[in-house]
Amino acid sequence: MRKLTYAGALNEALRLEMQRDPTIFVAGEDVGTYGGIFGVTNGLLAEFGPKRVVDTPITESAIIGMATGAAAAGLRPVVELMFIDFIGVSLDQLFNQAAKMKYMFGGKATLPLVLRTECGAGMSAAAQHSQCLESWFMHVPGLKVVLPSTPYDAKGLLISSIRDNNPIVFIEHKMLYGTEGEVPEGEYTIPLGKADIKRAGTDVTVVATLAMVPKALAVAEELSKEGISVEVIDPRTLTPLDEETILESVKKTHRLVIVTEEVGHAGSSAEIAARVAEKAFDYLDAGIRRVTAPFSPVPFSPALESHFIPSEAKIMDAVRAVLGAPETA
Image (cartoon, rainbow, N blue to C red):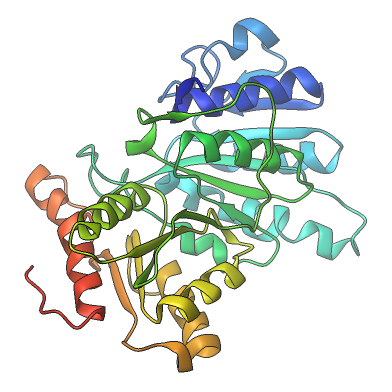
């Protein structure tokens, strides 16, 4: 099977859906002329023209407000906010309008809106351009939250998100855009709310998201040389969250490590840990461990940023800890 980059898979998903459905349009800062800051919308302006690929002003509130109105009026906007950090400018439009409109109109309104945005550290982009804020959106009824970690998932999940009739926050990690993986030609969908077992195992369950998934898989491969069998689960969506897959894995392995790049305080890792503690406590043979970023702004210094981002060594230590081995880091 052919390989595509994560960015290329997203681009293909957008192109296929825009060819299929003329009500879909793309809008955001530099999405047309420059193909987006990370190249995801390259070539779309030339193919679909300026009425369907719209460069917007640098005004996040206007971008989300426009998308909310367009979706309510029958179009299917896919808009991009260049960095997730700037989403605070548009919280009213997203949290109070897009997320609430269907409820406020008694189910008569549909909001097929996809908000693509980029998160994550690793580029020395400093505190205002490097955060992972997915837990913000988990807290808002009416929003779906999607986090692809591979090119295959990126394409299938974006197609599913565009076809969904609810507002969706589609979060991409900056450090994944250049990664490659096998991606089928043509259209395919991945159900929202269905986790993927990236690697089967029997000793420890590791739930990881976004850029932490390849790190968790690398740790699982290394530990397999010592006879430790690690099951790696990627939830792929946080809302809806596939509790069943996670709980069944914990009931099998009896141990759980959760790995995210978010700040741990009140993050998605805390929600997942709470649900497992509530619904599978009797199956646990060790306390749940979380590997997250510290409660700090993201540093600009490359050395400090490297320390800030959860590492393979920290994941390995957490796995060893739930197995009863001493930590080294």
